[in-house]
Each structure stands twice: as structure tokens, then as C-alpha cells.
Length: 101
Image 1: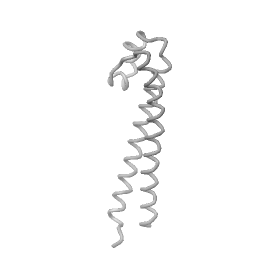
Image 2: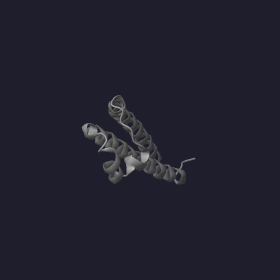
Image 3: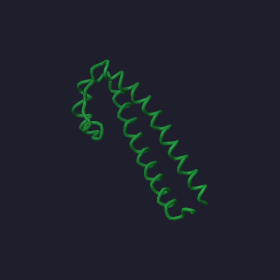
Image 4: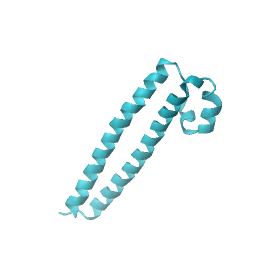
């Protein structure tokens, strides 16, 4: 049981590392295009779609797809990281209670 839980925690950690690298590449690719076109917006715009639609999209209508891609990748990577961190914490807590001496 202990070995299985340790393997699960290691697997989840590796999954989190892989997702981080994968989405970092995707986010940086989109970010590079946005920087080249001098698109500017803040963190408040990333997490508030209405604010993004009202303030940023009218300024940069030609970059709409790239902006949406960038924000969706950021949101998705944060959701996945939150879930994986919660799972790692849960299995870590279980390991603490079922540790073999």
C-alpha cells in the first residue's frame, strides 16, 4: 500500500512537471505573438472575461484569437496545477498516516 501511494505521488508530481512545461511552451508562444504586436493588458483582464471584452478586445480586434488562446491556456494551466497540487497534498497526507517504519 505504501509503495503504491509513493508511486502515485511521484507520478502526480511528474504529471504536474510535464503539464507545466507543456503549457509554458504554449503560453510563451502566444505571449511572444502578443508582445510582437504590442498588445497590453493586466492580470485583472485575464480572470474577468467581461472586463477583457470591454477594455482590451476593442483596442486589438485583429489579435482576438491570440488573446483568447493566451488567456485560455493561462486559466487551464492554473486549474490543472490546482487539481494536481490538491491531489499531491491528499496523497501526501495519506502517506503520513500510513507510513511504514
